[in-house]
Image (tube, rainbow, N blue to C red):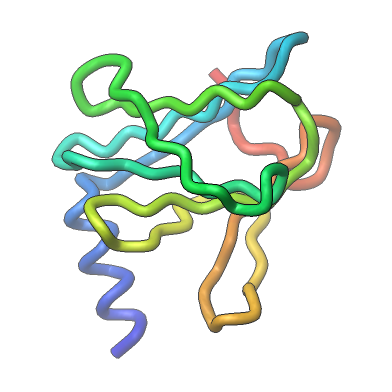
Length: 112
């Protein structure tokens, strides 16, 4: 059942994909979710304080982090918690998954 719910979440996100652009001043996380109307980003760097993502162009959401450091993160898209596909993921203490980002190696997502 849980797998089916995750499948439905992926379909409702419009086959979301994401990438990270690394910069000297920080990192920008992009999420492509065509049908989303509300995207919130949660990250371990700030204790998982919700950050509302900005729609930078139609269906592409972004969050700018002031630091380019390793972290764990996930999104809430239209109220549903989602960890988009990434190179490295791990289970959290609540039975869900989080993405792992590292700017210098293992866990690094595809960047554009």
